[in-house]
Amino acid sequence: MKFAVRSRPAPSLPGVHGTARVHRRTASLLGRLHEGDIAVLDHTDMDRDTAQSLVDAGVVAVVNAGPMISGRYPNLGPERLVEAGVLVVDDAGAGIFERLKDGTQVRIDGGVVYAGDTLVSPARELTPDVVRSEMDKARSGLAAQLESFTHNTTEFLRREQDLLLHGHGVPKTATEIAGRPVVVAVRSHGWEEELRGVKPFVREQRPVLIGVDRGADALASAGHRPDVVVVTGGSDDLPSAAVLRKARDVVVLVERGALRSATEQFERMGIRPLRFETTATTEDAALLLASAREASLIVGVGMHATLDEFLDRRRSGLASTFLTRLKLGPDLVDAAALPRLYDGAVRPRHLLGAVVAGVLTVAAAISVTPVGQQWVDDVTPAVSRTTSDLIDNARGILP
Image: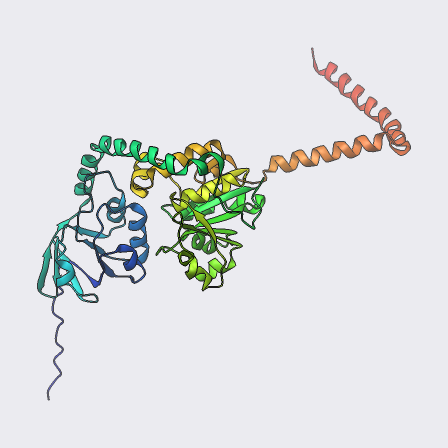
């Protein structure tokens, strides 16, 4: 009698395994990623927003053809990936795109990329210690970046002085903004927590909701319908067509003098977009739109104001962001701070105060009527006797 021999599976090779999704442009790659994939891309100085998108997609590893941190400024993307437990290797070289095909099963071990048993490319693994060291070096070179920033600020002010100083060029929206609070949402680091924090404010104050690019999807996922959506024409970061169609106004940023073809993709969806000709970033254009239309208060969701975050998120648009913040001044409130200033909650002491005030008001109103006067006359002798008895008892107790 023969027994079937169960073969034991071969021991798995060490390292992180996954399916390679390959594209040089990160924006083109993001929409194709699935849980457990390994993203292979070419993205020098990856920012935190892009890193968060990779984390949200569920990748187990990121292979970068170039350096994750070039040293020009302290970008926050690698730190976010490492914090989330994603394996990160960089400096794999441009040749990896010829040697590694999309959909290949990949293994990464010790900073080396393999396709099966075949070595594809050596690379450098970014451990927390390596990231920390590289970031410290990058911060030491900030002086040169600030000098460049000064020049860019002057150039931006020259190009956009009419917009910044007088609000010229801002489109007229069908949504009435004047005198109303506005919430501008950007799908950035921490947006989910910030949207939860401003929920009481949104529920009670009914502000105008402006979604910036995929920030409109963020508002929709939180149960809100954006009134205005601000996007960049030709961008890969557009919100869903369903969200765009539900918005009352869709504002599209285009270059000055751009042809009508810049907005054709929206017209094909049955949307009549408003053109906004400016070189400001999409986020800053949304803030300037709310300010020019005389919003009473602007709450920014997903916007962060530290120097590191400015440099990380919008290095090319740093001048735009800096001057926009100066323009808005105290009218702009960070959503992270709003719950500490306003929670909309009704406290028990508020209810008690309202009840006491109501009782006193009713008593005062009744006391001036004939019936009220009769009640006062009837109650006064009893109150006087009770008061007198209390005084006598107190005298008897005291020595």
